[in-house]
Amino acid sequence: MANKPDWSKEEQAVQAVQMAFDLSNDIQRAFRVSAAIQNMTTSDMVRKVLELPYQKTRARPRLTITLKDEDFELLARKYGLGPQDRATIRQRVSEDLQVFARNYLTESE
Amino acid sequence: MDIQTLTLALGDSTHAGRRFDVMPITGDEPVLQVTVSGAEETPVYLTVTDTQILCLAYLFDEQELNPERLNELHENMLRLSVPMPLSSLGKTGDHYVVYGALSPTSGAAEIMQELVTLAENAIDLLQTFEDYLA
Image (cartoon, rainbow over all chains, first blue to last red):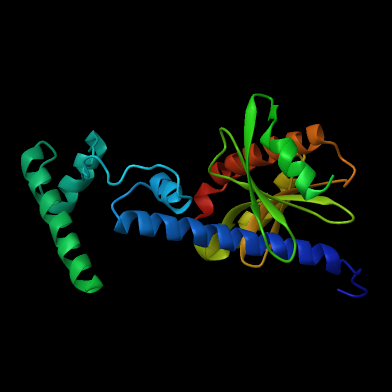
């Protein structure tokens, strides 16, 4: 490109927006991670940092997944089971989640 | 319209039934992160220069795209950019963006119209270009 016009001020503005976007992503990630570690919701974590009233811990932390018909079909194929064999599929899902958690905790240590 | 006036104006206003959550982000140049109600997943970043008010929403990064379909995506982006109301498509660094620019003398109503339109366009574009993601 020859004789590019001087838009350096505008380029600075674009750069500033880029930095703001990166920063807000980093902030969001920091709050999500710290909230998860402290077993809190992200919005409660924000309230804690701002020293506003917040719930100390999640009322009942749970790990649930709602499986739809098409999920059962995909999982049945993955495990080599029939889609109607939902009890076994749920059992295998539970085992997979436990394996993930065990590996994750080992890696984090 | 300067950033401070705009922050106050947006915080107290609704436009077409939409509210605006404004988060100032400090840096060399002040930038506002504006979340439009009903379009929370696509926040709009706004900055004011001597020559324009620049509003920008991020769509996706180059790394998220299927490299084999990149040319086709670019062609479609260029074609779609013309009829799209009040917004255009572009790229900053590795990020594909949708943006709109207004005159620095624009009033709050025009800026709010731009913010609502841009946030809605961003959601529509994310759906439109879903197939190009890797």
